[in-house]
Length: 165
Length: 278
Image (cartoon, rainbow over the protein chains, first blue to last red):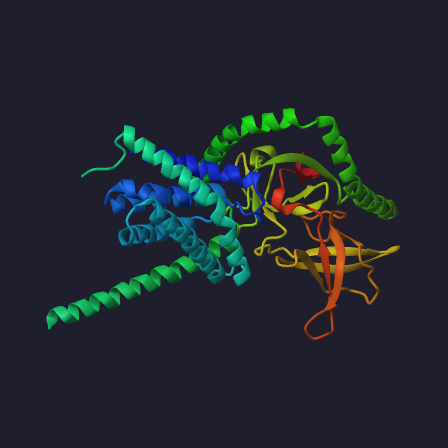
């Protein structure tokens, strides 16, 4: 359990640091918190409600520390949490499926946040901007996702990180 | 039969609750995103705590960056870059001093500012939010709506300020609500207008409400007028790139290009009013 929290916290701060290194118009936009949520979900072993609570808490932290938009990311991450648990129920957790889920989660997250912010009048509607935001986010997050997958598989060998009833 | 009715009722309630939640979220989001209120004590503590951890992680990277970079060369480059900005400000200052000498009634000059340097901690989080978090807050005398610049020109204004950090709303943000009064230098005189928005696809700013019918040459310098309480005069906003007409072919629309690297800001300067130090 503690390893899953550490992975989530490290990814959260890494996302902030990475934003300083890459330009917002590059192919390496970080969404490491989303990637971490996708990666740790299988280890919650049907404790879905606990995972959703994690999503809300990390969303709130994201709101307060990074974007100053209290409750918007808490809601976004909760919706994403439901979406991730739905995708894992449809597809089994194998490496190829994991990558599919990762890509779908990134696309889903970008689309929901875009529609939400357009609805609130914060940004103007532009399909090309939505497209760019998805394309720019895929590359670096898949690399980070594969790295996290490896780390979690290794951890699983030596530590009991799966939650049990 | 009763069960079916009950189920239908439950469904109605569920739809109603979902509708209320969605409408509530949109309403709340609108208020949160549009109205820039001060951070609460709890928000400020969490934000400062989180960003403090990030600063600690960043420290070794900054040290390596400092050692690798040739500081002398960087200083010279910075000076060369800031020359244009300084010369524009000097022109403005000279003009203002001359006017003040005439009136003898004003005690302080509008463009008198104190420079407060700050380092970016994170920027453009989540792609849609065009803002930068910097490591100076109310403890350093930062308040909301203070102009933020780099050597290439105006960057934006401070928005949410916590004790040790603050957020800078970039000029490129769709949500930038303050229309800025600007002037375009045409030979010896100025043409006035309002900076109204940013075109993300063309990567240009737009100026509307051009006051005169004078020909504006491409490449003319655009600076702030200083009209309004917060924005001082003489800050470079950009250079004229293109002049078009609006949809009704009546008013002129000036497109300007900024030299500020909005996507890769690392160090910025906050302009504090001098009277705030007293």
